Amino acid sequence: MNFELKTLDLNLAATHKTDALIILVSAKDKPAKGVLSQLISEARKSGDLDASPAKLLSVWRPQGVAAPRVVLVSSGDGSARVVRQAVTAAVTSLKSFKVEHLTLCLSEAGDYRLQAAAQAIADASYVYTTTKPSAKASVLKRVVLALPTADQTKAAKPAFELACAQVAGVSLAKEWGNRPANFATPSHLADVAKGLGKKTGMHCQVLGPKEIEKLGMGSFAAVARGSVEPLRFIVLQYHGAPKSVAPTVLVGKGITFDTGGISLKPGPGMDEMKFDMCGAASVLGTFEALSHLQPAINVVGLIPTCENMPDGSALKPGDVVTSMSGQTIEVLNTDAEGRLILCDALTYATRFKPRAVIDIATLTGACVISLGHVRSGLFSPSDALANALFAAGEAVLDPCWRLPLDDDYAEGLKSNFADVANVAGREGGSITAAKFLQRFAKDYPWAHLDIAGSAWKSGGAKGATGRPVGLLLHYLLTSTPASNKPSRRSTKA
Ligand code: BES
Ligand code: MN
Ligand code: ZN
Image 1 (tube, rainbow, N blue to C red):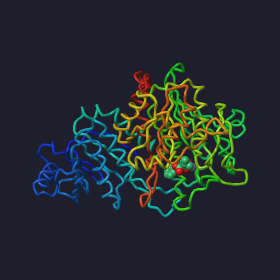
Image 2: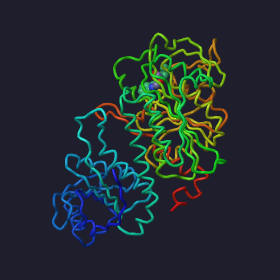
Image 3: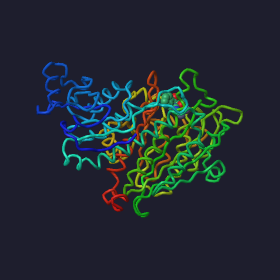
Image 4: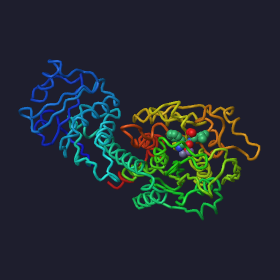
């Protein structure tokens, strides 16, 4: 999908050649001359279009308008959230028509509205086709985002570029999240990373079972042991700032299928455990977005990826493994595998002398119970890091919520046979999981995002959401000191 930013007031929009014209109508818009303004005024007067959020009115071939389909939709209070809701409703209403070229007229771009609108268009027109040949792929090719004045268009340029990069990143994360486990193996994810590694400023290294053993990642290796698919450890680096600038490290859980291992999960709904690599997918998506934007920052992506399967060589409950940190772990439940692969990646992260490390993982069912599918769980001993991530999530409608990390929560992780156990009781399960990870993240400011509830949707709309690419991207661009310097792209231009 190709996005363009254009200046079109409503008079120009009336003459604009496009398959469908969506006009976001705000209560603040003043009645003016011209066929579209008149149409809006009359629709308002008649009561067919009111100011309630996402109220929709479709018009077929209005006289004096070049576009065959016009959708008027109320943007309510004008917030990014309602813009998203309104654009989603409008694009969905056009889904059965052949719309190759869509134009969306906004009256204002600020406060993340443009980003919300672009993401909503991409999400509402998304169709998964990779393993479903019968699916009708979206025909939408060209999207014009229009603002009424040249000054507004000029001011919105950076937001527009960010929106396009985010859409690309989210779309990559969704695509790989949605692919079934036999189409998204650890080796496939490594290939995606290698592809990203060829882009400007990027570098990619992929380690296999032998290297992992040499590094002493006994915890990660133990999870992979029950599967015939070999594990991969992906190290992606983006260098947009001088080497001396400390990087932010993103660590993504890449379990391409989680059966639970010998602590086997119940059958119903187990298919959804193909989404257990959505943390990894969000790291890949964020790198895709960075490759578009080329900001003056340094970022490292670490992805431990493998399957969690039961077989004769699989890890057993009670087994003790030795992590790369030297700490031994008693594996009381092989289904708590995410933390077992993440802990070694967190130890590996130390070598980058990072300014911050953020891990992203579909870690616990307990997090879904706490926060549902709306907010991701956020854990960090650092107020500064937690506040920055929280604010980034609020801004780009990819919200999270901070949960506590009191040491008392770690009591249940004590073991008679190892330095630590991999599970505590059922209570506070997402917090005890975070307490386990914290033991391996002592060398740098660290935060953990539990995306078990936010990374995908179940039911009729089953599918990956691409979250939290928006949050991560926004955090990286606003909270990384070196981003004040000109980006590689703007230096070239
Ligand atoms: N990948 C799951 C977490 C999960 C479960 C995410 C359901 C989304 C929906 C993780 O590996 C897991 O199995 N966690 C266990 C931990 C437990 C054994 C302490 C869980 O949450 O049940
Ligand atoms: Mn599990
Ligand atoms: Zn898992």
